Image 1: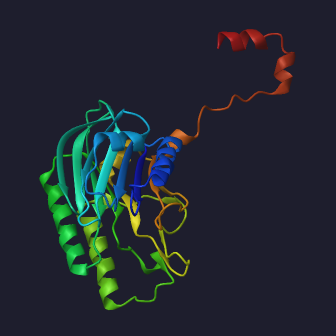
Image 2: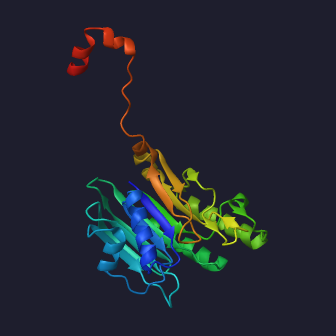
Image 3: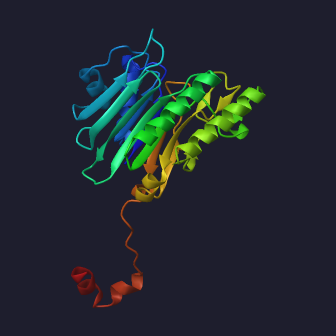
Length: 265
């Protein structure tokens, strides 16, 4: 399974649509979450153009006054939705994946700037998890918080407020019983346009149950392109190795039994 999180900073232009469509195809994405779409109305034809074909389903939360906006798109038939909830800060989806017996829950997050509003958001998500009977959880998106001061560079406003933000964010992850799996690729996910500051504000968090089914999960930070945020792909590394190579010693070819042995094997 491959899951994408991308704070796109406006998804409506045709140029961005082409780049996103190529990204979804190249990375073989099964479930995509976009934040800050800045679109009030999204329909099936728009999502099909973005996905590259008609084999997709979607759920969105509209932007308000061209601000914010969330969109989830997934491969049709792979994920069967049983329950959903939309609001301006998060989208919750629960259902069965690929005919398996486990129930999966996805939450697409777009966190505010205010510390108080973030604390309120963390509380809403914790309550959502407590009410849900899903087995495997993936909470991903733009959290607008860091877990450690080392996840910021070029930003010196490490005041008591930002330290409390970090503590509240880590408490939230602990309360949700989520794991911040290893990261590959880039170290930061957001970059100021002039490169003077950068932070890791976007990530994918998964439950231990998810990790048990996909034990080699990593979040890969792709290069920044059409947004000041980098796309984040959650994927299972074991799927990347391909077929195992066949190893042979040249001297075996001189043995008359070798050809028959290979054919029978």
